[in-house]
Length: 439
Image (tube, rainbow, N blue to C red):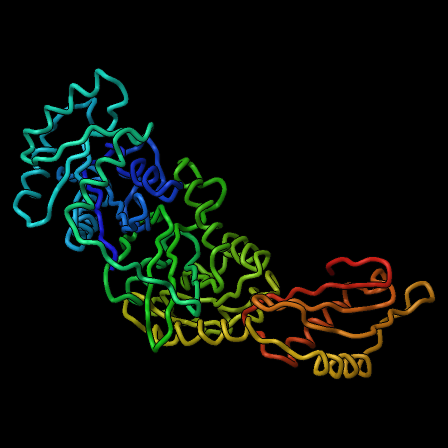
Protein backbone atom coordinates (compact mmCIF):
# COMPACT_ATOMS: atom_id res chain seq x y z
CA UNK A 1 0.00 0.00 0.00
CA UNK A 2 1.06 3.59 -0.53
CA UNK A 3 2.13 5.64 2.51
CA UNK A 4 -0.70 7.62 4.08
CA UNK A 5 -0.48 11.18 5.36
CA UNK A 6 -3.33 12.48 7.53
CA UNK A 7 -4.15 16.19 7.77
CA UNK A 8 -5.53 17.11 11.21
CA UNK A 9 -6.09 20.25 13.24
CA UNK A 10 -8.70 22.44 14.86
CA UNK A 11 -11.50 23.94 12.73
CA UNK A 12 -10.89 26.63 10.12
CA UNK A 13 -7.10 26.51 9.90
CA UNK A 14 -7.10 25.68 6.17
CA UNK A 15 -6.87 21.89 6.20
CA UNK A 16 -9.17 21.39 3.22
CA UNK A 17 -7.52 24.22 1.27
CA UNK A 18 -4.14 22.53 1.84
CA UNK A 19 -5.64 19.17 0.85
CA UNK A 20 -6.90 20.64 -2.43
CA UNK A 21 -3.58 22.38 -3.09
CA UNK A 22 -1.61 19.15 -2.67
CA UNK A 23 -4.07 17.14 -4.77
CA UNK A 24 -4.11 19.93 -7.37
CA UNK A 25 -7.88 19.78 -7.70
CA UNK A 26 -10.92 20.78 -5.69
CA UNK A 27 -11.93 17.59 -3.89
CA UNK A 28 -12.76 18.92 -0.45
CA UNK A 29 -15.28 21.74 0.01
CA UNK A 30 -13.68 24.95 1.29
CA UNK A 31 -15.59 27.74 3.02
CA UNK A 32 -15.03 30.27 5.79
CA UNK A 33 -17.62 28.58 8.01
CA UNK A 34 -16.21 26.26 10.66
CA UNK A 35 -16.93 22.55 10.55
CA UNK A 36 -17.41 22.22 6.77
CA UNK A 37 -15.46 18.96 6.41
CA UNK A 38 -17.09 16.20 8.45
CA UNK A 39 -16.11 12.84 6.95
CA UNK A 40 -12.58 11.86 6.13
CA UNK A 41 -11.63 12.17 2.46
CA UNK A 42 -8.95 10.24 0.59
CA UNK A 43 -7.01 11.23 -2.51
CA UNK A 44 -3.91 10.00 -4.29
CA UNK A 45 -1.16 12.60 -4.75
CA UNK A 46 2.41 12.69 -6.10
CA UNK A 47 5.60 14.44 -5.09
CA UNK A 48 8.55 14.27 -7.47
CA UNK A 49 7.35 10.92 -8.83
CA UNK A 50 6.54 9.39 -5.44
CA UNK A 51 2.90 8.56 -4.82
CA UNK A 52 1.07 8.68 -1.51
CA UNK A 53 -2.44 8.80 -0.07
CA UNK A 54 -3.57 12.06 1.53
CA UNK A 55 -6.41 12.04 4.09
CA UNK A 56 -8.39 15.17 4.88
CA UNK A 57 -10.32 15.31 8.17
CA UNK A 58 -12.79 17.61 9.85
CA UNK A 59 -11.70 20.21 12.36
CA UNK A 60 -11.31 18.71 15.83
CA UNK A 61 -13.33 20.74 18.33
CA UNK A 62 -12.87 19.52 21.88
CA UNK A 63 -15.35 22.08 23.20
CA UNK A 64 -18.27 20.41 21.43
CA UNK A 65 -19.66 23.74 20.15
CA UNK A 66 -19.71 22.67 16.51
CA UNK A 67 -22.35 20.26 15.20
CA UNK A 68 -21.19 16.63 15.10
CA UNK A 69 -18.00 17.54 17.01
CA UNK A 70 -17.73 14.10 18.60
CA UNK A 71 -18.37 12.28 15.30
CA UNK A 72 -15.84 14.44 13.44
CA UNK A 73 -13.29 13.78 16.20
CA UNK A 74 -13.89 10.04 15.80
CA UNK A 75 -13.34 10.29 12.03
CA UNK A 76 -10.09 12.20 12.60
CA UNK A 77 -8.91 9.60 15.12
CA UNK A 78 -9.59 6.85 12.57
CA UNK A 79 -7.53 8.74 10.00
CA UNK A 80 -4.64 9.21 12.45
CA UNK A 81 -4.74 5.54 13.40
CA UNK A 82 -4.27 4.38 9.80
CA UNK A 83 -1.83 7.14 8.75
CA UNK A 84 1.95 6.74 8.58
CA UNK A 85 2.61 10.44 9.14
CA UNK A 86 0.41 13.15 10.64
CA UNK A 87 0.37 16.77 9.50
CA UNK A 88 -0.83 19.01 12.33
CA UNK A 89 -2.19 22.15 10.66
CA UNK A 90 -2.22 25.41 12.65
CA UNK A 91 -3.03 29.03 11.79
CA UNK A 92 0.06 31.25 11.63
CA UNK A 93 -1.97 34.45 11.80
CA UNK A 94 -3.88 33.48 14.92
CA UNK A 95 -0.88 32.00 16.71
CA UNK A 96 -0.75 29.11 19.16
CA UNK A 97 -4.14 28.45 20.74
CA UNK A 98 -5.14 26.34 23.70
CA UNK A 99 -6.79 23.86 21.34
CA UNK A 100 -3.57 23.60 19.29
CA UNK A 101 -1.67 22.78 22.48
CA UNK A 102 -4.23 20.19 23.56
CA UNK A 103 -4.13 18.47 20.16
CA UNK A 104 -0.33 18.49 20.21
CA UNK A 105 -0.38 16.97 23.69
CA UNK A 106 -2.59 14.12 22.48
CA UNK A 107 -0.45 13.54 19.39
CA UNK A 108 2.74 13.36 21.48
CA UNK A 109 1.22 10.42 23.37
CA UNK A 110 0.97 8.43 20.13
CA UNK A 111 3.69 6.66 18.18
CA UNK A 112 3.12 8.37 14.81
CA UNK A 113 5.60 10.96 13.48
CA UNK A 114 4.09 14.46 13.43
CA UNK A 115 5.01 17.48 11.32
CA UNK A 116 3.59 20.90 12.16
CA UNK A 117 2.38 22.94 9.19
CA UNK A 118 1.90 26.62 10.06
CA UNK A 119 -0.62 27.64 7.40
CA UNK A 120 -1.42 31.15 6.13
CA UNK A 121 2.21 32.29 6.22
CA UNK A 122 1.78 34.28 3.03
CA UNK A 123 4.22 37.12 3.75
CA UNK A 124 7.52 37.84 5.49
CA UNK A 125 5.76 39.12 8.62
CA UNK A 126 3.85 35.82 8.89
CA UNK A 127 7.07 33.80 8.80
CA UNK A 128 8.11 35.32 12.13
CA UNK A 129 5.14 33.52 13.72
CA UNK A 130 6.45 30.09 12.68
CA UNK A 131 9.05 29.95 15.45
CA UNK A 132 6.31 30.29 18.08
CA UNK A 133 4.91 26.87 17.14
CA UNK A 134 8.06 25.00 18.21
CA UNK A 135 6.54 25.13 21.68
CA UNK A 136 4.10 22.41 20.55
CA UNK A 137 6.97 19.96 21.03
CA UNK A 138 7.65 18.66 17.52
CA UNK A 139 11.05 19.06 15.85
CA UNK A 140 9.82 19.69 12.29
CA UNK A 141 7.80 22.89 11.81
CA UNK A 142 7.13 24.38 8.37
CA UNK A 143 5.61 27.72 7.46
CA UNK A 144 3.31 26.98 4.51
CA UNK A 145 0.64 28.71 2.46
CA UNK A 146 -2.23 26.69 1.00
CA UNK A 147 -3.20 29.81 -0.95
CA UNK A 148 0.19 30.41 -2.60
CA UNK A 149 1.74 26.93 -2.38
CA UNK A 150 4.67 28.20 -0.28
CA UNK A 151 6.95 25.44 1.16
CA UNK A 152 4.39 22.68 0.64
CA UNK A 153 6.79 20.55 -1.40
CA UNK A 154 9.45 20.83 1.31
CA UNK A 155 6.94 19.83 3.99
CA UNK A 156 5.77 16.79 2.01
CA UNK A 157 9.34 15.76 1.25
CA UNK A 158 10.09 15.75 4.98
CA UNK A 159 6.92 13.74 5.67
CA UNK A 160 7.67 11.10 3.05
CA UNK A 161 11.24 10.77 4.30
CA UNK A 162 9.80 9.34 7.52
CA UNK A 163 8.14 6.33 5.83
CA UNK A 164 9.27 3.71 3.30
CA UNK A 165 7.91 3.86 -0.23
CA UNK A 166 4.89 1.66 -0.92
CA UNK A 167 3.25 0.15 -3.96
CA UNK A 168 0.23 1.83 -5.46
CA UNK A 169 -2.97 -0.23 -5.33
CA UNK A 170 -4.60 -0.41 -8.74
CA UNK A 171 -8.35 -0.34 -9.18
CA UNK A 172 -9.09 -3.30 -11.42
CA UNK A 173 -10.52 -2.65 -14.87
CA UNK A 174 -13.50 -4.77 -13.87
CA UNK A 175 -14.40 -2.61 -10.87
CA UNK A 176 -17.98 -1.33 -10.86
CA UNK A 177 -18.34 2.36 -10.07
CA UNK A 178 -21.40 2.88 -7.85
CA UNK A 179 -22.79 6.25 -6.68
CA UNK A 180 -25.08 6.33 -3.64
CA UNK A 181 -27.43 9.27 -4.24
CA UNK A 182 -30.64 10.69 -2.80
CA UNK A 183 -32.08 13.48 -0.69
CA UNK A 184 -30.40 14.39 2.60
CA UNK A 185 -31.14 12.16 5.56
CA UNK A 186 -32.53 9.14 3.70
CA UNK A 187 -29.79 6.81 4.99
CA UNK A 188 -27.10 6.92 2.31
CA UNK A 189 -24.18 7.03 4.76
CA UNK A 190 -25.75 4.31 6.93
CA UNK A 191 -26.02 2.13 3.82
CA UNK A 192 -22.36 2.76 2.97
CA UNK A 193 -21.20 1.99 6.51
CA UNK A 194 -23.22 -1.23 6.62
CA UNK A 195 -21.80 -2.38 3.30
CA UNK A 196 -18.28 -1.65 4.55
CA UNK A 197 -18.96 -2.82 8.10
CA UNK A 198 -17.18 0.26 9.46
CA UNK A 199 -17.98 3.90 10.20
CA UNK A 200 -16.48 5.33 7.04
CA UNK A 201 -19.04 8.15 6.79
CA UNK A 202 -20.61 10.06 9.67
CA UNK A 203 -24.17 8.92 10.37
CA UNK A 204 -26.57 11.41 11.95
CA UNK A 205 -30.32 12.03 11.95
CA UNK A 206 -29.79 15.66 10.90
CA UNK A 207 -30.15 16.25 7.16
CA UNK A 208 -27.08 17.36 5.23
CA UNK A 209 -24.38 15.62 7.30
CA UNK A 210 -22.30 14.46 4.33
CA UNK A 211 -20.93 17.50 2.51
CA UNK A 212 -18.37 15.91 0.17
CA UNK A 213 -18.43 12.89 -2.11
CA UNK A 214 -16.57 10.01 -0.47
CA UNK A 215 -14.86 7.25 -2.48
CA UNK A 216 -14.01 3.86 -1.04
CA UNK A 217 -13.07 0.53 -2.63
CA UNK A 218 -14.92 -2.61 -1.56
CA UNK A 219 -14.31 -6.19 -2.67
CA UNK A 220 -17.15 -8.65 -2.13
CA UNK A 221 -17.82 -12.01 -3.74
CA UNK A 222 -14.76 -11.65 -5.96
CA UNK A 223 -16.06 -8.37 -7.42
CA UNK A 224 -14.45 -4.99 -6.81
CA UNK A 225 -16.62 -1.89 -6.34
CA UNK A 226 -15.78 1.79 -6.14
CA UNK A 227 -18.50 3.18 -3.85
CA UNK A 228 -19.20 6.91 -3.90
CA UNK A 229 -21.27 8.28 -1.02
CA UNK A 230 -22.61 11.76 -1.72
CA UNK A 231 -24.28 14.68 -0.05
CA UNK A 232 -28.02 14.69 -0.62
CA UNK A 233 -29.53 16.90 -3.30
CA UNK A 234 -31.88 19.36 -1.58
CA UNK A 235 -34.70 21.38 -3.01
CA UNK A 236 -33.44 24.59 -4.60
CA UNK A 237 -35.05 26.70 -1.89
CA UNK A 238 -33.28 24.65 0.76
CA UNK A 239 -29.82 25.47 -0.62
CA UNK A 240 -29.29 28.25 1.88
CA UNK A 241 -25.63 27.56 2.45
CA UNK A 242 -23.12 27.95 -0.36
CA UNK A 243 -21.67 24.65 0.86
CA UNK A 244 -24.91 22.86 0.07
CA UNK A 245 -24.70 24.20 -3.48
CA UNK A 246 -21.15 22.87 -3.79
CA UNK A 247 -22.33 19.53 -2.39
CA UNK A 248 -25.17 19.33 -4.93
CA UNK A 249 -22.67 19.94 -7.72
CA UNK A 250 -20.42 17.25 -6.23
CA UNK A 251 -23.36 14.82 -6.26
CA UNK A 252 -23.99 15.51 -9.93
CA UNK A 253 -20.29 14.90 -10.60
CA UNK A 254 -20.53 11.59 -8.70
CA UNK A 255 -23.41 10.52 -10.96
CA UNK A 256 -21.27 11.34 -13.99
CA UNK A 257 -18.36 9.27 -12.62
CA UNK A 258 -20.50 6.24 -11.84
CA UNK A 259 -21.86 3.38 -13.91
CA UNK A 260 -24.63 2.33 -11.51
CA UNK A 261 -26.52 4.66 -9.16
CA UNK A 262 -28.24 3.53 -5.98
CA UNK A 263 -31.14 5.98 -5.60
CA UNK A 264 -32.01 5.84 -1.90
CA UNK A 265 -35.53 6.88 -0.84
CA UNK A 266 -37.09 7.33 2.57
CA UNK A 267 -39.93 4.78 2.63
CA UNK A 268 -41.78 6.82 5.22
CA UNK A 269 -41.73 10.02 3.13
CA UNK A 270 -42.05 8.33 -0.26
CA UNK A 271 -41.17 9.60 -3.73
CA UNK A 272 -40.83 13.38 -3.87
CA UNK A 273 -39.94 16.01 -6.45
CA UNK A 274 -36.30 15.71 -5.40
CA UNK A 275 -36.20 12.01 -6.30
CA UNK A 276 -37.79 12.84 -9.62
CA UNK A 277 -35.08 15.41 -10.27
CA UNK A 278 -32.29 12.98 -9.32
CA UNK A 279 -33.77 10.13 -11.37
CA UNK A 280 -33.99 12.39 -14.40
CA UNK A 281 -30.33 13.35 -13.94
CA UNK A 282 -29.36 9.66 -13.74
CA UNK A 283 -31.23 8.83 -16.94
CA UNK A 284 -29.90 11.90 -18.78
CA UNK A 285 -26.35 10.86 -17.85
CA UNK A 286 -26.88 7.37 -19.24
CA UNK A 287 -26.32 5.67 -15.88
CA UNK A 288 -28.00 2.53 -14.59
CA UNK A 289 -30.24 2.84 -11.55
CA UNK A 290 -31.51 0.72 -8.67
CA UNK A 291 -34.25 2.06 -6.40
CA UNK A 292 -33.69 1.45 -2.69
CA UNK A 293 -36.64 2.10 -0.37
CA UNK A 294 -34.79 2.53 2.93
CA UNK A 295 -36.29 2.56 6.46
CA UNK A 296 -38.94 0.06 5.35
CA UNK A 297 -39.02 -1.30 8.92
CA UNK A 298 -40.65 1.97 10.02
CA UNK A 299 -43.54 1.67 7.55
CA UNK A 300 -46.81 0.10 8.65
CA UNK A 301 -49.98 -0.79 6.73
CA UNK A 302 -48.43 -0.07 3.33
CA UNK A 303 -47.83 -2.68 0.66
CA UNK A 304 -44.78 -2.55 -1.59
CA UNK A 305 -46.85 -2.15 -4.76
CA UNK A 306 -48.59 0.85 -3.20
CA UNK A 307 -45.22 2.44 -2.44
CA UNK A 308 -44.32 2.11 -6.11
CA UNK A 309 -47.58 3.65 -7.27
CA UNK A 310 -47.06 6.86 -9.18
CA UNK A 311 -43.30 6.44 -9.58
CA UNK A 312 -43.58 4.84 -13.00
CA UNK A 313 -45.88 7.57 -14.21
CA UNK A 314 -43.66 10.35 -12.84
CA UNK A 315 -40.44 8.90 -14.29
CA UNK A 316 -41.13 6.14 -16.85
CA UNK A 317 -37.46 5.09 -16.79
CA UNK A 318 -37.82 3.93 -13.18
CA UNK A 319 -40.42 1.38 -14.26
CA UNK A 320 -37.51 -0.58 -15.73
CA UNK A 321 -35.26 -0.28 -12.67
CA UNK A 322 -34.91 -2.99 -9.99
CA UNK A 323 -36.42 -2.04 -6.63
CA UNK A 324 -35.36 -3.22 -3.17
CA UNK A 325 -37.12 -2.57 0.13
CA UNK A 326 -34.60 -2.54 2.96
CA UNK A 327 -33.49 -1.12 6.27
CA UNK A 328 -29.85 -0.08 6.29
CA UNK A 329 -29.78 0.50 10.06
CA UNK A 330 -30.68 -3.12 10.91
CA UNK A 331 -29.20 -4.73 7.80
CA UNK A 332 -32.49 -5.93 6.30
CA UNK A 333 -32.10 -7.05 2.65
CA UNK A 334 -28.61 -5.51 2.40
CA UNK A 335 -27.33 -8.83 1.08
CA UNK A 336 -29.37 -8.19 -2.09
CA UNK A 337 -27.84 -4.81 -2.95
CA UNK A 338 -24.46 -5.81 -4.42
CA UNK A 339 -25.86 -8.80 -6.39
CA UNK A 340 -28.40 -6.39 -7.92
CA UNK A 341 -25.57 -3.98 -8.79
CA UNK A 342 -23.62 -6.80 -10.48
CA UNK A 343 -26.63 -7.90 -12.53
CA UNK A 344 -27.58 -4.39 -13.64
CA UNK A 345 -23.95 -3.71 -14.56
CA UNK A 346 -23.82 -6.94 -16.58
CA UNK A 347 -26.95 -6.02 -18.51
CA UNK A 348 -25.68 -2.52 -19.27
CA UNK A 349 -22.74 -4.17 -21.06
CA UNK A 350 -24.94 -6.57 -23.04
CA UNK A 351 -24.54 -6.50 -26.83
CA UNK A 352 -27.27 -7.81 -29.12
CA UNK A 353 -26.31 -8.94 -32.64
CA UNK A 354 -27.73 -7.16 -35.68
CA UNK A 355 -29.33 -10.42 -36.80
CA UNK A 356 -31.28 -10.71 -33.54
CA UNK A 357 -32.32 -7.08 -33.75
CA UNK A 358 -33.59 -7.43 -37.31
CA UNK A 359 -35.72 -10.41 -36.31
CA UNK A 360 -37.00 -8.28 -33.45
CA UNK A 361 -37.92 -5.43 -35.85
CA UNK A 362 -39.79 -7.84 -38.13
CA UNK A 363 -41.94 -9.01 -35.21
CA UNK A 364 -42.61 -5.41 -34.17
CA UNK A 365 -43.74 -4.48 -37.70
CA UNK A 366 -45.96 -7.53 -37.95
CA UNK A 367 -47.60 -6.70 -34.64
CA UNK A 368 -48.06 -2.96 -35.22
CA UNK A 369 -47.27 -1.05 -38.43
CA UNK A 370 -46.08 2.59 -38.29
CA UNK A 371 -48.97 5.00 -38.88
CA UNK A 372 -49.47 7.01 -42.07
CA UNK A 373 -48.30 10.63 -41.82
CA UNK A 374 -49.72 12.88 -44.59
CA UNK A 375 -50.01 9.85 -46.86
CA UNK A 376 -46.50 8.60 -46.13
CA UNK A 377 -45.40 5.71 -43.94
CA UNK A 378 -42.15 5.17 -42.04
CA UNK A 379 -40.01 2.43 -43.56
CA UNK A 380 -37.50 0.70 -41.27
CA UNK A 381 -34.50 -0.82 -43.01
CA UNK A 382 -32.66 -2.32 -40.04
CA UNK A 383 -31.65 -1.85 -36.40
CA UNK A 384 -28.14 -2.25 -35.00
CA UNK A 385 -26.45 -1.76 -31.64
CA UNK A 386 -23.40 0.51 -31.86
CA UNK A 387 -22.42 0.97 -28.19
CA UNK A 388 -22.64 -0.56 -24.72
CA UNK A 389 -22.39 1.08 -21.27
CA UNK A 390 -25.07 2.31 -21.85
CA UNK A 391 -26.55 0.47 -24.84
CA UNK A 392 -27.03 2.62 -27.91
CA UNK A 393 -29.06 1.56 -30.94
CA UNK A 394 -29.29 3.07 -34.41
CA UNK A 395 -32.46 2.61 -36.44
CA UNK A 396 -32.03 3.15 -40.18
CA UNK A 397 -35.23 4.49 -41.81
CA UNK A 398 -36.38 6.31 -44.92
CA UNK A 399 -37.50 9.54 -43.22
CA UNK A 400 -36.84 10.13 -39.48
CA UNK A 401 -39.63 12.75 -39.34
CA UNK A 402 -42.21 10.03 -39.97
CA UNK A 403 -41.47 8.34 -36.63
CA UNK A 404 -44.14 9.43 -34.15
CA UNK A 405 -43.44 9.64 -30.41
CA UNK A 406 -46.01 6.91 -29.79
CA UNK A 407 -44.31 4.51 -32.19
CA UNK A 408 -40.88 5.34 -30.80
CA UNK A 409 -42.08 4.44 -27.28
CA UNK A 410 -43.61 1.27 -28.68
CA UNK A 411 -40.28 0.18 -30.20
CA UNK A 412 -38.31 1.01 -27.02
CA UNK A 413 -40.78 -0.83 -24.78
CA UNK A 414 -40.75 -3.85 -27.08
CA UNK A 415 -36.96 -3.78 -27.05
CA UNK A 416 -36.95 -3.85 -23.24
CA UNK A 417 -39.35 -6.79 -23.22
CA UNK A 418 -37.29 -8.75 -25.73
CA UNK A 419 -33.85 -8.17 -24.20
CA UNK A 420 -32.69 -7.82 -20.56
CA UNK A 421 -31.64 -4.21 -20.03
CA UNK A 422 -32.93 -3.82 -16.48
CA UNK A 423 -32.18 -0.49 -14.81
CA UNK A 424 -30.33 0.86 -17.83
CA UNK A 425 -31.37 3.79 -20.05
CA UNK A 426 -31.41 2.99 -23.75
CA UNK A 427 -30.17 5.47 -26.33
CA UNK A 428 -32.14 5.30 -29.55
CA UNK A 429 -30.87 7.13 -32.64
CA UNK A 430 -32.52 7.50 -36.04
CA UNK A 431 -30.64 7.71 -39.31
CA UNK A 432 -32.28 8.58 -42.60
CA UNK A 433 -30.95 8.83 -46.09
CA UNK A 434 -29.71 12.41 -45.76
CA UNK A 435 -29.78 13.24 -42.04
CA UNK A 436 -29.64 11.73 -38.57
CA UNK A 437 -30.81 12.75 -35.15
CA UNK A 438 -31.51 11.24 -31.76
CA UNK A 439 -35.11 10.24 -31.14
